[in-house]
Image (cartoon, rainbow, N blue to C red):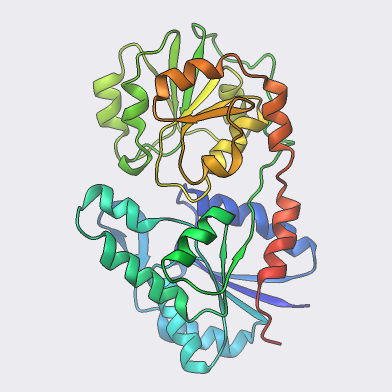
Length: 335
């Protein structure tokens, strides 16, 4: 049985796209006969990340990771994130002469730039350095691959993400109170880099429904709570039930490398109004299953005329089974 070692700074109880991707893929990899070992922050002493206190940073991990490498002797090492554990594992692998694969999930430099202006270039340079020593680096889309190649990244391979189309199916009769129509929904983390306030500022008819939690939720709910519906974080069938009330998903983020929520909305037959940026641009066909533009209000209203069936058809093209197969193909096997 081939052994895959994954090193990630993103793990439960965090709620983010990286964690969701890992939890979708790992059972599929195990079903394919791989033995999976995960090194994650909960195994170490941690401190909170200053800008994101819900994210814990592992301390003093290099020696322990080096011991795990020696004892486990994995066939594959994949560094999932560029945080302290990723850097510690990178150092341990380089010290032992072990090749490794990396995974570029998040424009973290853009996240930081939203909150702390002026750090974009040095953080981008640091992230490029992290991936430079990898045998291969996985990315989620061709457009991200082109962007990173233009910035000097090497050895990039595309691994498309997926959606659970059996879970994300519109419920025609969700067990929830009805909302004034039309219903425009935002569902993602309530954090500055996701631009939820841009959605809440839109002058739209009917209901604006906000699904999610995060560091700016209290501020936004206090400022925009009257006339808008905040329901907090939802997942699984409960999330699907709330989404089933929606007519349009408004996605104001400009910092995505992919955006799993776009696929989840489409799988529920919900057209997507988004900016013409990476992530939405790689999935949405304007005028068919969503809109891509500069005027989110006009785009959201235009989405009311789009076909739910067309949205579902787009989502069915993305499966986690295909993602798992591509993930394995992109890994560098040591032995």
